[in-house]
Length: 209
Image (cartoon, rainbow, N blue to C red; front, side):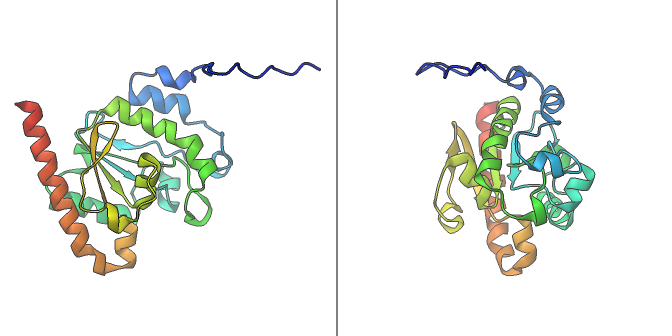
């Protein structure tokens, strides 16, 4: 039996077929049958993302829940309904922004994603960001921030700051599901999204100028 030789040090691995896609539609078609981690065999639907492919604001959550798994769209359950209201309050329509998650498939019982899952899925998200080229990213919850920034800081430490993902300004706030569990966080979350709207408009003005 022949065994493949290990790649020499410094050699790059062959590019994945999806890495050369040039639109979100192409990317979705290239990855929506993914089974690189066990979640690919337990999902009902692959949850790619939804919204404006040229969005200036991109929102990134943790993972699909039961409603999202059933419908194939992120943030359509109770947390999604709250997110829609939050967006409307800062004068965004859902169709204006782009919404997706760190994971494209639902973890069992909505548990937190584990490293094996995020390692397989995060390249897809990075490609989405590359295709959309948003002016601003809003992480909904700590899991999104941890995976995009590689940070170990707490949500309390990250909130209220303008961070950076590969040169793109990023802010972090509570996940809408957390606001449903703890309404006391709604006021600070409101302060966060007002700051997001202000920064977004400043960045848009810079770009147009």
